[in-house]
Amino acid sequence: MGLDSVLSLLHAFAAFNGAIIATILMTTGHPESRRSRLTLGGFLFSAAALLGLFVLLERGLLVYGHRTGILMAIISAAMPALFLDYILTTVGHRRGRNWPYLTVPVFGLIAVWFGDVLGEATDFAGGIALQMTATFFGVHIWHRIRRDPKTSPKRLKAMRLLPYLFVLMGVLHAAQIARFLYPDTRILFDLVPSIGTLGLTAFVVATLFGSRTLSTLVTTPSEQPRNPAIELSLQQNVLTSGAILDHGVTLETISALVPIEPQALSDYINAAHGETFREWLNRHRIAHAKDLLANPDEARTSIEAVGMLSGFRSRSAFYEAFRAATGQTPHQFRQQSLQE
Image 1 (cartoon, helix red, strand yellow):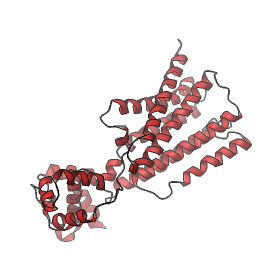
Image 2 (cartoon, one colour):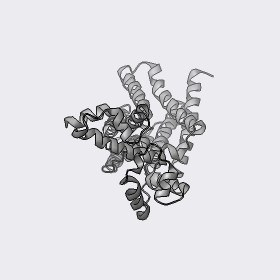
Image 3 (tube, helix red, strand yellow):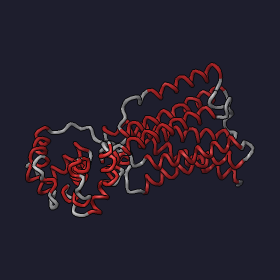
Image 4 (cartoon, rainbow, N blue to C red):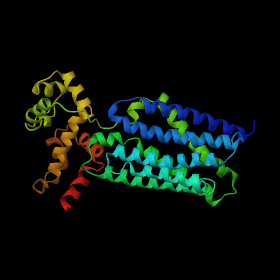
């Protein structure tokens, strides 16, 4: 069996597994993460479909024609639309998520009447340009939301998969550009689908053997209605009273103030706020710390003292939690806030 046959076999295997994982992803999980799962699953399914078509064309099992061109044009336009929708949904940017889908019928109709401008006419440069544009805007939006001090910890947690996806797309785009610059280099022609194969395979392996399930890979902050009575009790008895800033506060301590059973309170915070009790606790402590750091009257208060006043036992714990929540150190946040 030659190298080309081995590569085709690997591509086909990755496309098959990617399609299965994408289907599972789109049909499982909680309602609140439905759009994230559908868009990421749709993107993966489209990638698997294009990879599968590539194998069929490469092996001569499918002849490129008008109908195939229309299908590939639609898939090539759908991929960046699904990709950008997934990014916007994950970072919580709900406006404009539907606009990218206008490219799908537009390029589909162009393929029907004038030929596949994303494929045969441009060697898929049109489809690649669309995907590169989507990747660029996706990275820009993600970076802006991640650097925003107002971004909640649960939103940052929901965005944890995005850097890996951007790295994969960056490597893929670099290979695509190299292929256009050196069209006669055979290895570059095989490199692009090979990277797609590796990407799909990595996702499948991470899904099947990783510690996270499919649904948690795309978990977004919950939008489940909150209980007004519990929220009022938490606000009055825990947040306003400052009980949350006590170094020794525990779930049992907070539940006694609400009052509600500890496990019931933990389940409620997880369902209504989309975060664990510890994450909820740290979020409010970080908010208190940010108020102190941004207050000019507290400019002489040391960073360590701000952490202690916000409920953290040590400087290292404060720095770790603050950086995870804001993407900045407390010192950087204070400098930025006092300069504004």
